[in-house]
Length: 327
Ligand SMILES: Nc1ncnc2c1ncn2[C@@H]1O[C@H](COP(=O)(O)OP(=O)(O)O)[C@@H](O)[C@H]1O
Ligand SMILES: [Mg+2]
Image 1 (cartoon, protein in one colour):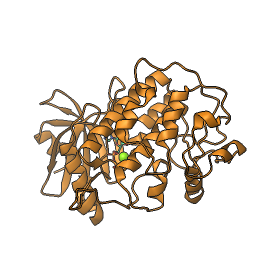
Image 2: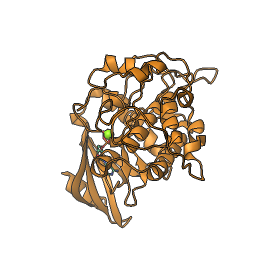
Image 3: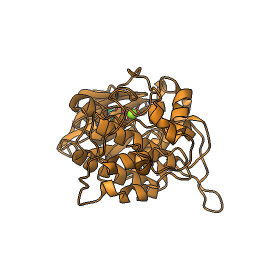
C-alpha cells in the first residue's frame, strides 16, 4: 500500500511535501478528525541505517511522546505499517522554518526577536527540566506557526539524560548537530552535560535572529574552535543592538562550560524582562559581513578575520565585555 492509501485509511488526505529530512520526507496532510492540516514525517525503515533505527528513532519518538509545551511542535500520533514505514503525525509549522524566514525577512527587530527567543527558551526549559537535551538546535529545526510563533521540532538527536547512582547526569561526548551551532566542547568531543551545550546553540540562534548572520565561520572547524574559545564574537555595527541583547549573546556563547548560563538564568536575563530595555548600544567595532557568515546552508560567504579589538577577550577567563568596551 502506498502512503496515500495508508494515510487515507487513517483519515488523512495527503498534500504537498513541506520538507525533506535525512531519513524521510515531511508532507502536509488534511486530518478529518482534527479538521485541520497536519505535517507527517514518513520514515521508511528499510531505507535507513541501523544506528538510526536502534538509537535515534526511538529517542525521537520517546521525546515527542514526553514533551508537551506550547512552543514545541505537538505530536498527534505515531504509527507503523507492517511493511516498516513509520508515520509521525505532527502539528504543521505553517510558516516554515526560522532559517527561511530570516533569509526572506532579514534581521529581526529586537522586540520581535525577544518574543521569539522567550518562546524558544521556555521550550528549552521544558526539555531540560524533564532531563531532555535537544542537541540539534538550529534555525532549520525551529518552525513557525501561522502567527509566526516558535515551534521547536526535530528531536532526532535528542537525548534523555541517564543518571548515575548519585543522581548525577552521565556525561555525553557524542557529536550531534551542525558544526556552526555546536559548542566548542561538543566539537572537541569533551564529555559534558548536553543541556549546557544546548545553551551555546541558543546563543548562535539569537545572534542569527538579530543579525541575519552566523557568528562563526564553520568552513574550518579547527579555526572556528580557536575563535570560539577566545570568545571572539563579532558584533557588526550594521545593527544597532541594545547592550542587554549583546550581553545575552555574549553570555550564551561562553566557551567555559562551568561558567555558561543555565536555562533558568537565561530566562531571567535583563533583555528578556519587561519593561523592555530601550538602551541603545555605544559604537561597535566590526563591519557587516567582515566576521560573520550569512545564515545559509552550504559554504559560508565570509571568512572570520580576527581583528585587533578581539585580542582583549583572548583566553577563557571571564571578562566583563561592557567594561572592556567590546560592544
Ligand atoms: N511539523 C512540521 N511542519 C512543517 N514542516 C516540517 C515539520 N516537521 C518537519 N518539517 C520540515 O521538514 C524538514 C525536515 O524535518 P526534520 O524533522 O527536521 O528532519 P531531520 O531530522 O532529517 O532534519 C524541516 O527542516 C522542516 O522544513
Ligand atoms: Mg532537521
